[in-house]
Image (cartoon, rainbow, N blue to C red; front, side):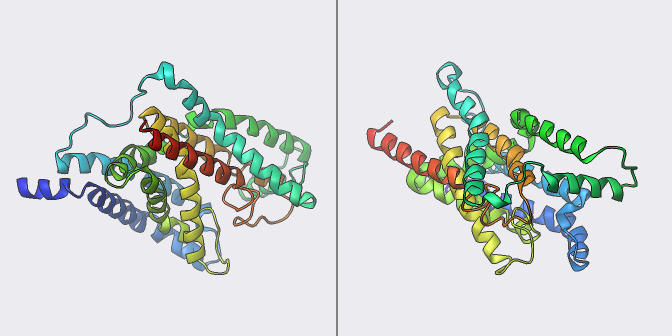
Length: 315
């Protein structure tokens, strides 16, 4: 047993990734795919099914579960776990950046997209109104509200993005304690930050592959499905990884990254409310696209420069 523990301890990153991928993918293949595949065969969106979405969300806890199992198997213990607000009086501004930064970057990307495509900007949010009407009709509810009232409700929902970090913090903690609170520090220790940040982003993106195949973020039926979607997801996760990793390394805690991840999940679909027609997820206005995500790309470059400077200074 001691030899096994020593063997695993020397390969903590590999051990963690194998455990996390195996647990998550096994769970998704056992719970999500039996419901999703028949829906795909029928030409329906598998991620439109509430039970499928529930099981996908449950899978987001496995990176954190992988941390616990890996720490137990390697005898690493739980002393330096990167989940406490270290020196909060000095680092509080990074928590604010995590809370509001992604919201601002999503807004910047959406603005850039609609400036380049003004004909697709719809202030009446008719797509949101039509979707709401269809959902009410499919549920058998009588149409007792007008389109303007539905639109007003849509605008009111936009205000909820401010509290999105709190609403999404539980599931996002499941991911961030794994990717930023465990994988990033161990990769950095072995390979340095310059390699650890993009490498952890690629691993994070590949981990999503089973649900990317089902249409997560990029839909279905696009040219190059599903490989193009998986590659795009990896690129997106690398860009996000720079911001999330910068917040984590600056604070010695994954909690600011949890807030940033929660904020992003809460507002990433907001630009689609203003989209007239069908959006291309590889372009925009959502942050999954090259234009919609331009703010995150710029910030990734700035974070790279900051981390490189910090490394040079020996901070």
